[in-house]
Length: 639
View 1 (tube, rainbow, N blue to C red):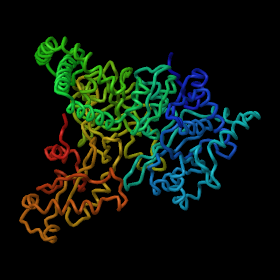
View 2: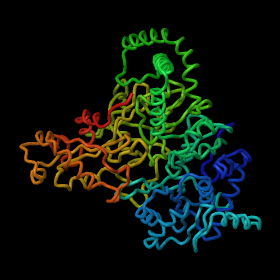
View 3: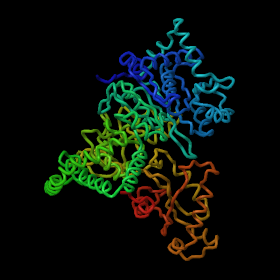
View 4: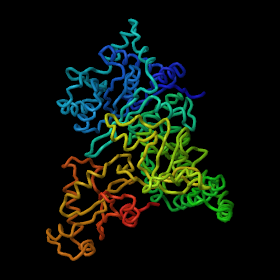
């Protein structure tokens, strides 16, 4: 059955109800702990009822509606209600701070806001003094009693049902009036102490992601939902699921292990942390196993690695960065064939008696694969799961790109890359210094493959811009081309490889976004710090490279002649660690993932023209390359 392809998500929701009717659309755990299903038809009818009630309360066309909640069945119901009323939602999770609530809802001109539970209601209440524009508040949780002046979601749905029974069809008129260029959602990117930016994504942006998905789902497919639904990545994945009649099961980090076995998903969106944790548990379990089982596992893994690497080479899916010559390919092919010939039979036997049990133990018996995003997979984890038969299709994108720019597929799974560019998507690699196009370069036979630079993209998924921020929009968007701020290259497999970041935002392994500049400014204000750069891209925690201040430490009583002596002084690290703990702590308003977990002191100062620009801004890619050995110490590769 072909996917539904519509120009707006309101029409998509309507057509999904007509095509899939009583098939399960979403599944949530009931009081007994068992999954309970909501059909496409019933979800749409409730969404229409909610839209009708919202319109009756005075919600106007193309308004922005605040939606502060985490993954649950009522979340998608509220999204339906907002979209079917011809409006856009402004979503955020319940970990949002009071300051963020006040800023986002005011900046987005929100009059209606939907809150998940009483805990987020308390946060909202404390922020409400700065929100004179908010007129209507709705409580989502069906088990909670709505405070005075707050509407209960269940009551609004009932009210809408009554109105519709009396012939109210205002929602249908709103659905028809929605344009592809209308705002679908306004997502405020996570900030640290900086100001969040409102990314404007249209119906056309999201529809292009569904239209161009390079693989198919089908009615009967089961998708496990664990990533925050307010993020564009999980959001578009659920839209894809709806377009193809699959069922989305809501889970959590606490119950993911059990739910993998219960649901036996066929596909899911995920973040690298899930696979890191699963890999660690498997390795721990293996280390604790009896000697024979441990030996069989390692033998199975070794044979499988040789066989899979050889097979990937022969189908053109071995990572090729330099562009290998015919002679190099022949030499590598000979080695791969010999290893394949020796290991193939043991691999087939050990896969059945060892690795099949591993797949079954983690609930991946029916698993077709996962699309991992929000950060880079560690290479050893990436190889491990793909080689043992659990496909991990890593993708790449930004909130500003709705979000997918590139993704691996089962037919083009080049480990070490994020796959080929998404259909209808143009990628170019730009020189960081001169601004010239490195790829595609028609003057070169290889078109510039293998050349490192800044990734720019153009396509139907590119955002409309930042809300009320024309200057910010102009900095990243020009002539339809979005500057991603990431550094990468196009490989000789015609896949995109991400190498680092030229812009500031750090994305941790768990998907948390951290703006390093405010942290760096805070640390540099310390008398003990001359320069510093916060690091941690695709890692579990933040770290810092710090140029200590000779004068500051001398004032503190550590008398040394130069930076080399200071770095070697036993008390210098202790003093710096205490200073970091004092400045960056939960008591100072920082979240746990924003704290600096490790650091290294540098014996050379940053200089203009080298580590610094002429205006004394950090050249992050230069510093990263120069101190790769120290970064490896802080973040040692695992095996």
